[in-house]
Image (cartoon, rainbow, N blue to C red; front, side, top):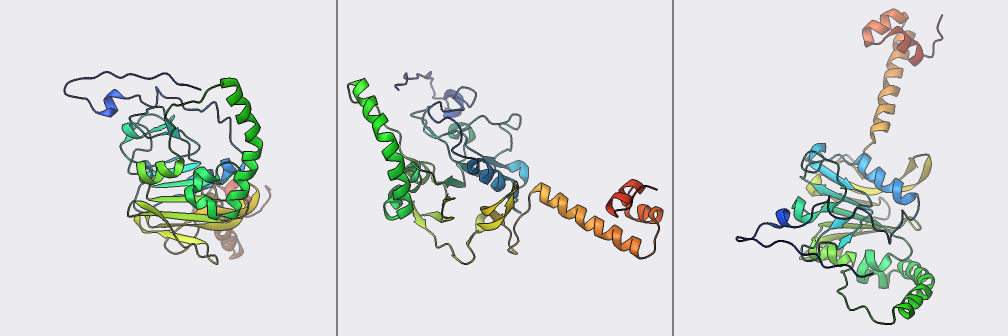
Amino acid sequence: MSQSKTSFPHTEPPLSPRKTLPTMYDLPSEDPEEPGLPDEFHDLQPELLSRTFRSPLYPENRVFSGTDMNLYYDVRHPLWHKRPDWFLVLDVPRLYDDTDLRMSYVIWQEGISPFVVVELLSPGTAKEDLGENAKSDPEAVELDTLAENTESQTEEETTQLNGETDTKETPPRKWEVYERILRVPYYVVFSRYTNKVHFFKLEGGRYQQQSFNPEQSRIWIPEIELGLGLWQGEYSRFTRQWLRWYDASGNWLPTDGERAEKAESQLRQVVLNLLQSGMDIEQVARLAGLSIEQVQQLGGIGNS
């Protein structure tokens, strides 16, 4: 599908791209050729990454994480974009211009590239996600072969209908965008099918695959004083291996819900200990700063 060429005003002296190129309000926030998420995992895994990210070096209002959001990266081709499954940007306002929720992430407006990008391997995306590394990964080859078999007939029919070759410029693949254009320092590709993690670090302008300890399945990222690893556990009532952040002590970082549950459990234990020590409900309520009803509920005592 061809796109009309967009023209932008020229001034003397030239204005910055932030002032002349389209903003997130002008650019599409959805791709009609990519309808919806591939599966529920593509929703839950990014959500867990966002909910457990808490770097001691960056306050929450100076961090932005995007999920399945258009990422516009080329000032020469303002409509070109990628759509990472999850990405993290440091030292930017949580809100766009400190006022609005983001519809897309536009590099020439924000001025800062993502620090981490995570792609979740799916049929048809291995070549995009892994670049040349896809050729040496049996799972990637199998997934892309499956996708190519289902798409080949559609592509052939499209060529016959068009009757001519499309000579327009082709956008680069994700690997090239992340490595050479945006220069994203850390790039992670995770397969839900085999729980295999590809972890790449930008070194000397090129991605170098890092060793991912198969026993601990963890990688430390010193710039944020956090690590990323594979956690076996239940999230959103589904038990499997998930990518999750951990701290310098090796502890998995909790979600807000998990922290609330832990705090309630600790408070319940305090109430039970006080009641078992011989205190009455009123005394426990005063000491713990709770209402009588809260003490009864935490202590498992019915209303009398």
